[in-house]
Structure formats: C-alpha cells, structure tokens
Length: 484
Image: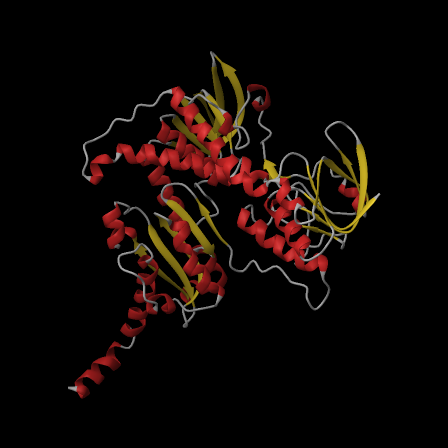
C-alpha cells in the first residue's frame, strides 16, 4: 500500500495547482484523475467557450463592415464551415492542453494515477482503473478538487428528448437552425449570443425576472437590451415545465402566470447552474460533510474531516478558474504547514467576467447591495458611459458603462460594474484599488495613457474629486475673492 504526504483528487485547475505547488515544496504527492488532466476549464469551459466566442465575434464584425468605412459584407455560412469552427475549438484545446500533460507533473515527482477514486476510510483511498483493477493508497492529507458538472433541471421529458450542455455543445458539427437556451446566466448568454451570431434563431428562457440575476440591476437591463438588439428572443420570468419531441423538432413548454406556451427548436441547450462532482467518492466513509451544492469547508478550506481539504468548484464558493487557483494556493499552505503559517480565505475582493460582447465585469457589491448594507445616504455612485470615452469612439465600441460604488465620506470603493469592450481587462485596476482599500480618488489621480478605454475608470475618480471640490464651492468663492 503506497503512502503519500498529500493525495489530490481531481486534475482540474485547483487540483493541478495544489499538486504542483506541494510537490515543488518537497511533499510526496499523488494526483488522481478520472479522465484527463486539465479539467472542465480546458475541455468544456473557459478555453473552448472563449475560442467559440471569438469566431462568433468575427462573424459579427464582418456584418459591421460599414461602421469601419467598408462596404457592407454578406457572410455566407454553411454547415461545413461550422464543422471548421468546432475543429478550431479542438485545435486550441489541444494546444493549451500541452501545459497539462502528465509528463510535466511527473517530472516534478508527482505520481499521476488515472482511475475512479473512492474513500474506504478517512485515510484510505481505493482507485479503480479503466480495466477494473483496484489499488489502495493512503496519505496524511487529502485535497478534494473534483470540480463540477452541469445541473440538469428535473423537467418532464428532458432526458428522453435530449439536450446539449457545455460538455457536449462544442462537439456538434452542424449549426442548429433554432436553439432554445434554458438559463439566462453567463454560460447560456455567452453561447446563446454566439449561436445567434452564427445564424441560429435563439430563444433564452430564464426563471428569474432578469438576465444575469447576480449582476448589478442596471447591467442586467443593459445586457437584455443588447441581446434583443442582436435578435435573441428573451422569455424572462418563465418556467420550463415539459419537453417533448414532435415532427422532427424539440418542443419546450414554458409557463408564466399560469399560462403555458409551446416553443419549437432544433436543439436545446441546458445552462441552469452547476453541481459538485461528489458522486462515487463515498465521502461518508471519510467523514466529509456535503450537500447537493458543495462540500462544506471552513475558512481554512478544511472539511469536517480536518485532514481533508477541498478547493475549486466542489466547494460551491465561486465557479471560476481563477478562484480555483486561489483556493488551491490556500490549501497548499494549510495542508502542509501548521500555525502560525495557516492562511484563511479572503473573499472580500472577488472579480469575475461574463464574456458576452460587450463583456460584463464585476467586483464587490452591487448598488442595491451596498445601499442595503450601508444605507442609501451613505453610498455614492460614479458612472461613465463608454460613449463618452475617446478610444471607445475610435474603436466603434461605445456600448456600455462603468459604474463604481463607493461608501462613506472617504469614498472607499465597495463595488464596481463595467459593461463594455474589454471589461474583463478594465476591472483589474479597480480590483487592486479595492484590495488596498483605496478611495476612488486614487483612480482619478493616477496618470492614464490617452486614449485608452481604461480612462472610464479614471473619469469616475475625477468625477469624485470634482464632486468633493464642488461641496466647498462657497469657501472657494471667498478664497478667489481674497486672492484677487
């Protein structure tokens, strides 16, 4: 029976960081993975979706040729071209996947084991490989980073009728003429907008009263307007009650206020959230508490079994690759060392981006959340339209705005919301300002290159400075009279 200092379960973003970091510190590490190293982000998430989105953006830009001084272009799209697009997705996955080859991690001294893991006891892990052979390994510490999978709603007839998820959508070779997207969150909108740009008739069905319900309300409303402008049909506050097949099409029955409507499409894409990959791990034998949404952890990412840690999507905290890497860095420290070297998680400043076009980026509190927490009179909003930015005008990227939410007399930044071109890049200087607990005036006083989109953040800071000076207008008027 092999014994290790640390066994990592799951070879996705979190697992690879934990295993690699621990091994380079000198720990004896085993990494157990069911399929292939790289996880959801590489094969069915970030990498393929952003590749897919870029191709769709090219199609949209071609149709905007007149905006840039060229004659209007007609983009011919045929099924064989769509196969070429999904082939491109596969090529990018293969290229990026070179970083996650087993040989790289084995060179660091990690024992990479492919198979299905199952706890036999708090310190024993049984692994069944692909030919059915079993082996048992043990460790002082464990990290569960098994990732997540699409959450499929319990809708009558959905399994029998068939559907796509992010795990299967990048393998199709034929563009569906029509597509119904169940879920108006990030995945549903990113893929729904892309398919619409390729030429599909897209309908988005969302149970909530607005798209992207976790985002700022103004951002959600702007996204809805932009999606409708691109031809997507949005059915908000609608519940899917039944799915069936008829005359070669899929039929989705939705309900609003007791009224049922049948929708028809060639394909259905399910994007209604995620669930942790805890099935088959036999966590009960390890003494690890969990529910349908997460493995329960404390602020040190320890589970109810204190020698077993968890990181990434399986914790249910934030379903983002960058957060998986962050949690992994916390686990490395806490699994290998002792007090006073232990590190607590810090979720005070967590940014994320929805990669529709234009992008939607967020960090911290929304305007509504901030007013509820600190009181409406104690909140200051600074907002800049992309249309007022010179670089945005030059780039023909004038849709959207930047909104920074501040609190108190010192105008401490407590949230920021950017919807516009490259919002995912622009959010980072606000993230740094929040991390350092700076006032918004710090953004105004920092020199920004002209002309750049980043000046939407600078303008918010300048507006705050001007607002403060305006409050001293009477005093300044007296000063200038004396000065003269």
